[in-house]
Amino acid sequence: MHQTKLKLSIRKADREDLPTIIALFASDTVGGHGDTTDPDAFPDYLAAFERITATPNETLYAAVLDGEVVGTFQTTILTTLVGRGSSNLMIEAVQTREDMRGRGIGEAMMRFALEEASRLGLSKVQLTSNRDRKDAHRFYERVGFEPSHLGFKIRLK
Image (cartoon, rainbow, N blue to C red):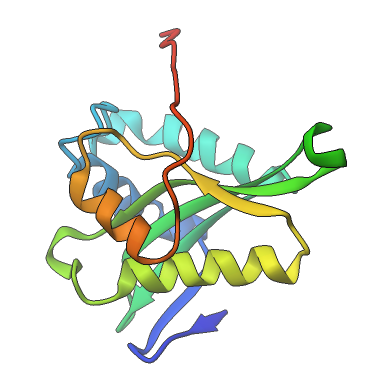
């Protein structure tokens, strides 16, 4: 567990965190991911959580302040032949509770991810961000990320 000066702790998410983490995603109107707190959707989230926790190179984290989950992010270690077989940390699904933004929670989560990548001896840390999230882009640049690539997607379902 990682502590910051906010008395924020960052730890691996557990099953009990799922409703709060799902609510963080469901409150996001920019992503267009279709996340919902509808109880009928919970089995889908639970199955995804179980796949994540069963995969050694993937980790879902919870940022906890005063006993409440106020942020989350997921990491994946990706090893490629590019860069002479380098391993990189991918960060996805970064979310801070809307009423908690601007308090350093996002920065603490990114610092945690960077420290973890360094500890593991990884070559780089990368992430993608929706092109409409201009505030997030400024934030990522402020904490040291540089825009370097253009991403493409195809939605399959």
